[in-house]
Length: 191
Image 1: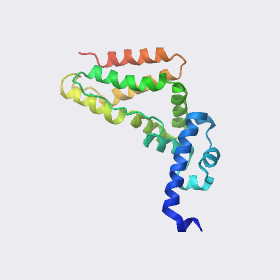
Image 2: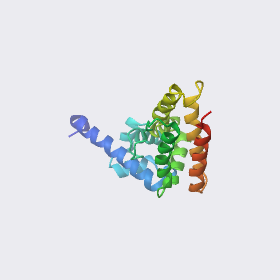
Image 3: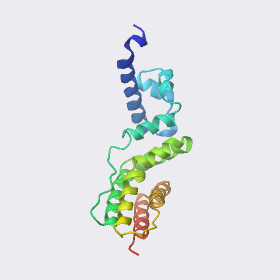
């Protein structure tokens, strides 16, 4: 039986196996040690099967991020009417990922992947809810008068994410968490 006769079923199964293998290897060996050869071996497919759908390991990581295979949590920003409390709640969920075993290693691997493939960086912000949930919540805060009418909501989200990312490069997770909380309190303090 050739691959074309079994087509869609085999292809869908291979695609899932590749994404599952990529996520598993990403968590166990990190981005720097993740190879297309290793993913192919783990998934039980040939390298050419992987390259049929993804041009690089960064593209694989980007899809795993988009599919929620690297972060098992939802990063919604609640809306209780208190923008500071809501953003701090969102921040606590993100920080819980960093504070988990291998959390900073996960973030560093994602940063290495983002440095190699811009799509990973784009997907990282989206996966953490910065581009959608945080920006939407900050826009509501502007509308409700909790933030200045000219507050740059997209840039505020990027600044908060940047602080988390930059701080995660250090070794002190507690300092990272406190620094991110301090920044959020400063940026979102009432005028």
